[in-house]
Image (cartoon, rainbow, N blue to C red; front, side):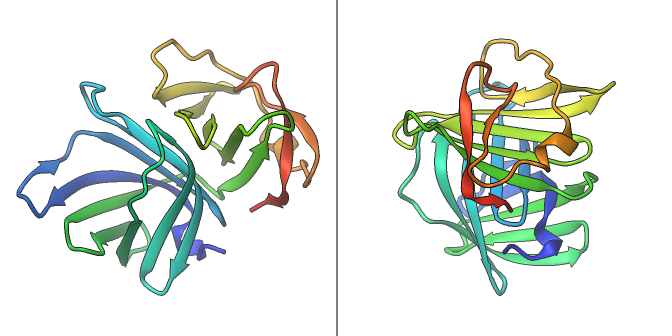
Length: 206
C-alpha cells in the first residue's frame, strides 16, 4: 500500500528540466489512493494533453507509477522519481536520471478512495478515485487512448473542471457513501460512463 502521506490530491506548481526548459502553467492533478492513481495534465493551449491511471509503488524515497491505461497511449518508459517531503503538504520530485525536478502541493481533499473496474465484455478498464469534494475518472483500453476527467463537488453535483475530452462533460450525481459500499466482483453502473456495467476488480477498494 502507498504510505498515508502520499494519499490525497496533489497539484503541480512547476517542472524544471535539465535542458533548461520549465513549465509553470500546465494544470496537473495527481489523485492518489492507497494503491491506485489518476494523473491528468492539461497545458494552457490544450496541445500535448496527457494522463494515465494505474498502480503506484513506493519503496523508501522512490515512487514508481505503473499505468494500465493512458492518454494518448501507454509508454514503455519508466515513470519513477525520488520524493522529498518538505512538509506534510509539499513534496519535491526528482527524476531518477535527474532529467527533471517537480514541485507538488497538497489540495485539501480528505481521505481518497480508489477502485479499479473492469468491463466484463471487453478489455476496457476504469479507475475511480473519490474523496469528499473531488472525483477523478479514467477509462479505456490498454491498447488505445483513455478518457480522463476531473470533477469537483458543487451543490451536490460533480462538475467537470478538467478533461482530455473535447466535448462538454455533463454534471453527474454520485454518492460517495454508495461507492464505499461497492465490494469486489460487484456489478455497478457509474454515471461517468452511462450504459456500461462494470465489475469491481478482485482487489476491491484500495
